[in-house]
Structures are given as C-alpha cells and as structure tokens.
Image (cartoon, rainbow, N blue to C red; front, side, top):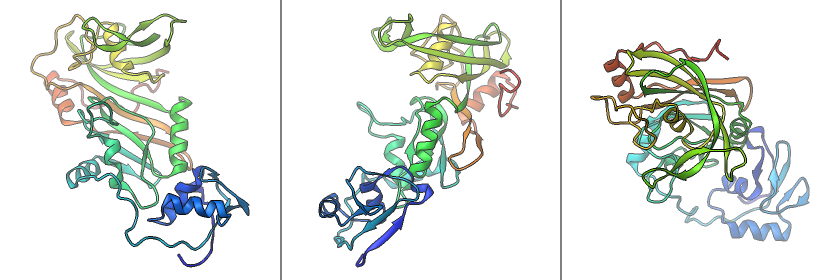
Length: 326
C-alpha cells in the first residue's frame, strides 16, 4: 500500500479492535509497524489519535498511512493439516457468511485442553478468508455430537454470543436414555457445582442454594418414543448452560444417557448398541445477526440412527419437539 487510505467501518466489521482490523486489511503487517504508526499519529480514527485496542464501530472512519509489508508475508498461522481441513469442511451444514454451522462429530473436542491437541477450534483457520477466522460462540462436550454455531464476522460473533449469554437461544437436544422417564413431560431443576464423584473423578454434583460455586440449572424434557420400558428417545431443552448439565440431570433422576460412563444411574446399559454417547445437539432457534430469526436442525449421526433403528424408535422427529408444550 503506497498511499493514504480512508476507510469507513462496515456493518459486518462492527465492534472489533483496531489492530486486528488493520491486520485483516493489510495481510502481513506486523504489530510493531502498527504500534509505531499509532505513536506517530499516522493512524487515526474519526480524525483522532487511537490505540491498538480502540474498538471500531459501524460508520467510523479510519485513516491508514502507506505501509511497507515484508515480502515474507504474515507470520504463519497454526497449521491445519489437509486431513483436518477436509474433515472440518465436511461438517458444514450451513454458511451464509454471517453464521457458520457445523455438525460436530462425537469424540472430537470443541476446544483444546490438557492433553487435547486436536479439536474444532484448532481447525477453524481452514475457513480463514484473510479478514476473519470464524469464532466459536458456544461449546459441546467432546462426546456430544451435533449442532455447533460460529460467527463469520466480528459483528455476527458478538450477536450470537449475546444470544447465548442472554438465553434467547432456544436449544434442543436428543438423547437415548436408559428406561422411560416418569412423568414423560417434565422439568429437572436445582443447584449444581463441580465436585468429586464416588470414583474420585471431578464431575458435577448437586449443591444447595448459597453453597460456594453453586449454579442454578433447569432442563425441560419430553419423551418422543419408547422401547417398552427399557429405553426412550427424549428431547431436552436446557434453559441454563451448565457444564454436563443434561447428562447430570438425566442420571440424577434415574435415566442416564446410553453410552455415558461418567454420569450413571442404577439401570443396566442397553446391550448391542454402538458404544458412544447417545446425546445429539438437534436444533437451535435464535435471532439472526443481521435480521429475522435463525432456525436450524442438525442431521443425526450414523451411530444414533443405528441405535434408533435397533430400538424401534419413531424416526420422524419434529423440528421443535417442545412446540405447544411451553
């Protein structure tokens, strides 16, 4: 870039840091060059001096001076192997350049952690358009399959994250459980916190209101299909978003998710089914980042449909199993 540019911030760039915005506009530009230009006052926002962490909003005018970018290009991002690029792109079920939706595989972590080096978050540079890498706005447990939403732009990410934080995101999960819950439509609620289970493992446990770290949790459920009294297909709607909430709630009322070896009840595991957690993020409804309502259902994985066939469950699942119940 060899001349001064004056650029107006667009609606899809709303609420982003100045230095990050500049790096998306000028690929290969280093942080040191940005800081030097900021100190000299060559970079200005609405005619005023700015800092690297200045937030940019729609309609603001940014002045960028000429920059010399090294031929070596930008620092190399974390590498995504060809195998992982192919894998994560095969999971895409929706993409409108604002919202990206993936059908996450069971057994694949959403984010990294101790001993976890392969995860969805680390694969997201596969979608990098040189301006923005999609960002996660919520998580799924490693062994839970299904719908995972990401923001394609800073404004979309902020909008989706706000919907989850404010609980205006209506989420629906499907689970195959041991036994048939009674009553068949109900609510599980109470306080829960991290603790130590019977086998010495860290897991969620019941708590009392006022206990340190206790968090209120609430889940609505409805039975959709049943295999005698040995198993049921259940729709779940978490009204709060606590760690392992659905698995914990079901086990605590005596109907564990099939394939869950952490949150168990006193019922025998179903024999012959695939040895995977039968919990799937099925659907979501929330405000779209630009306009209107966003609603999407996520195809069931092969291990889940196979288990449903083996148990003789109805395969016609409503887009919103709770419609008319709430």
